[in-house]
Length: 238
Image (cartoon, rainbow, N blue to C red; front, side, top):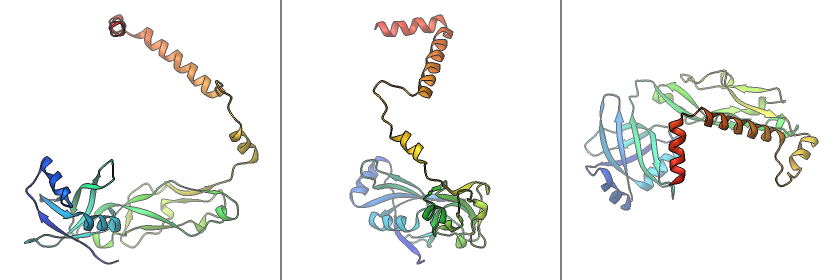
């Protein structure tokens, strides 16, 4: 994979004033690292969007800053505008190539499962990423999970079954289930799901839960101190 590079500029504009930078097509970022002073920077929005799309948080990005040595970083935190989903801020973690790091690496499910294709089962994936530890140069962009081993409904892939590159160690619980295949629903189950619920009718299980909740609420009300109940009555009367 080609090296991902971003050009950055130092900035002294902080706080609410950074809104003006965004209007100019820039994103404010903060560069930090172990034993390093934080550095406030700006990066070109289009350039950063591309770098983030290619790297996520699991590929090294090189930051080029005037009058500074090129720095190797991981994109650690990204804040987005809740309305338009545009990136408005990011934290960049500077790494040392000689020291091990931990990072979240996405899982890529590959292959075909007999239990899915021939037995009409449904693939269930329980993890989308995994935490690993390794030297920065060994950090994989993604880890492949071969689901072709899922030949029946009893087959399960655990983290310990995943092959990772040499020098990479999975830090999550190796007994965690990553993927399995559930059998298709029976005709009886499908029929039950399709049965309409009459208006005002409550399933027996939910009705029992509602009754228990009501009883618990009544008990809690009785257990309240007299002062608390009197205070609530005053609020209702206002």
